[in-house]
Image 1 (tube, rainbow, N blue to C red):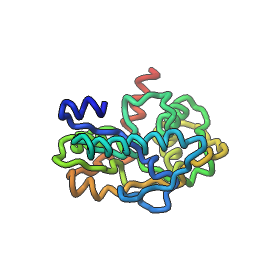
Image 2: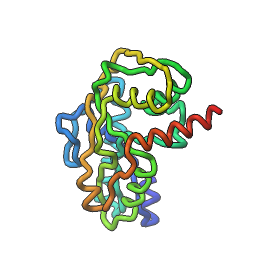
Image 3: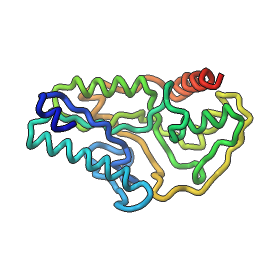
Image 4: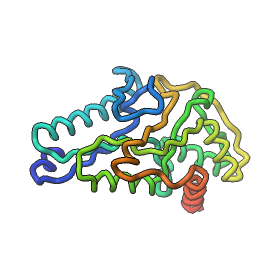
Length: 211
């Protein structure tokens, strides 16, 4: 894909991930932070694949004149997300609507930042339209614990589901929050949909799926 983009003088946008920051020692995470990533372990193959992909984009930009941009995407959710996606929002909504216990790994105090899909799409398009090659965090800087998310989903679905705690997976990050200063200043972008509104829309979509 990089070779093709360079040959056609096309703009290339890589969908990277907040996982490039690993278990961050800088909070919130800004684009200049090089991360704290385990090179081996359950999550390493994903983390390192994203970091390698960013390096490949940068190499093509420097040596082949590629117009290469990198979107470091933080947790994204919303309608049309796959119920079996495996991420926390579809997991919780699916479990709550089925009346099953919501599964939390660890004590639930780990934090995440949840960006609504329409906001994310606007950010990616803004990056594509930018006149310079950028590495940009795209995410919602509102930070919530996983336990808070679970309680919100239960309340908004009207479910009587409880919560089950399971062991925390190896190298699961304890904090996630994007510094989006660069996106605000260079792309004139920021999220507009708050968590409650986004969850309501997502829950409605899941209800339609299940009938």
